[in-house]
Image (cartoon, rainbow over all chains, first blue to last red; front, side, top):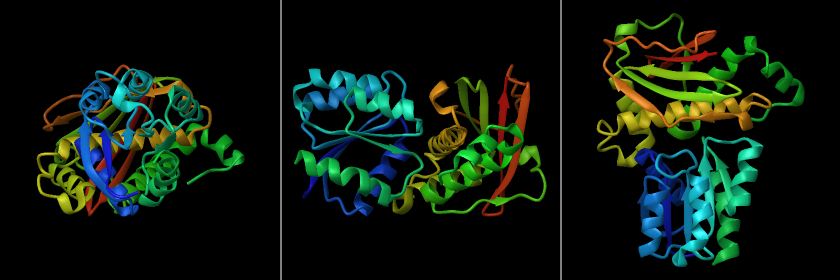
Length: 128
Length: 161
């Protein structure tokens, strides 16, 4: 799993940096990192770029994370790309909604680098 | 931190919400900032708190969660969250405080059994300055906790209908 490219979708730029740092702390070797502030921006990135992994918040303006995941099958570059939600919405219902929409994993904020590793590595192992 | 069914039952009683809210904030600071929060011995002077972050709650919990602190504390939060990228922390302090408030609100509602699914959070709003009056129609129940972050006050309030 060398130098995977990642798209981090969160309306907080500080949180995007934390997610990127957590991936590095988890020992995941990251190449290019793309950022988007909401689902619409993320779709625009994926129309132009192919990535290995998408990490996505749920509560965002313009287009939330669940709607973004539902839209992904229409994006050629996104086919087969795993999406893991990283969100404060931690209830069982939200997890089920996200997984039903097509997400492969779910991490609750606040999180540790170990939790990121625990959730991301199996997802990457299944997709790369 | 997970809580048992018995603890869950207790957690649904509002008299237990103050320690749950404090625990929610402490977890966010410990995990995302690598910092501890202490309980403040007395309420903070309001004029010293010039950054206010708000997250709305709708559904089974309806109201507003606010986090108030000084600009200095807000910048320090951003620095701790950004780690080695601490440069630019002052520019991003509103973003950092908004996200901290959002995580405290989410962590708190997730600790109350049966609330999580039925309660939605808004994206955070941040106000800077202290010369304002915040009026919410959600005033049936108010909970306020006073904490210290590096010796500086942080006040977290929950106002519900």
